[in-house]
Length: 114
Image (spheres, one colour):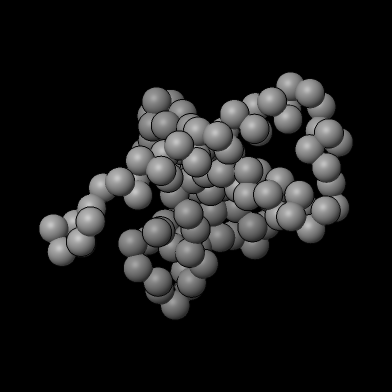
């Protein structure tokens, strides 16, 4: 993760591989400020930026799934509270994750006993 140096207005003005006396703030590779800075100075192509954003989107999808799980568990919402299209997509993702989990459980290590 890169460390950044910001100016007085909070805009990134430098990035470092390691923390320095002036650059102690560590940012994720998909941080919007960092992506913007890299694009401005020509260090990241539009394709690279799109890839970073796509990876960030995938992590956000998982975050939203987990958030819905927590809200449902705590009965703060019901699945029927979601719009029909959203609840259908959520249920499809949950079913796919359960199927994947079942497949992963079938894979055994040579030390495992069946």
